[in-house]
Amino acid sequence: MKPDKCKGNEGRTMKNRFKPLVAILLLFLILTACRSDKSLPFTPEESDKITLEVINRAEDLNGVFYTIKLSNKSNHIIKQNNVFFSYPFKTDSGSKGNEFMVEAKNNKLDIKPNEEVILSVFTPKEEYEGNKKILINECYLEIKGYIDQVKEENQFSKTTGVLF
Image: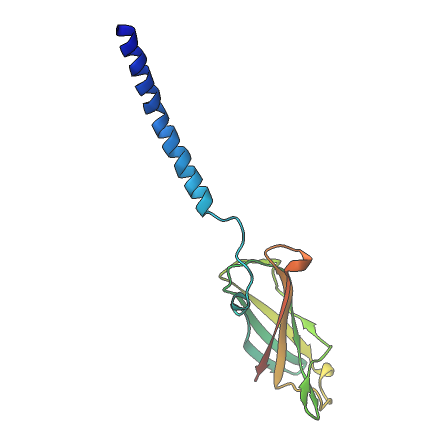
């Protein structure tokens, strides 16, 4: 009978050995099932969390200097973006965009969530002086780039109008 008892104890010992292993395996499966490697979708609400703002405007004899704050409050990384500044043209029915754009300086390739970047723009006086159709008391700020990865399907752009 002793061999049967030993055999029975071995079975219980084997079961006890597997309990922690099974518990760890279950915990791992639960944690990996809850964790999502998929990025959140880039919705219009997320786009609204990416903002451009003129925080300073200073005129001098040569033109106008602008300081612009780019804020990324979205849950996404902005990749390889460019920010452009332009003055609108006055038309009989209001105004329209201007193809002459100045690219902002001091930009970064990757702007992480909750990061802000301070950009600068200079518009030379000879570009707008004497042209009554250019509205220098307002501007358009445009950002073009990618969200999370540099792929064609991840391209985005956004334009903001500013009055001074």
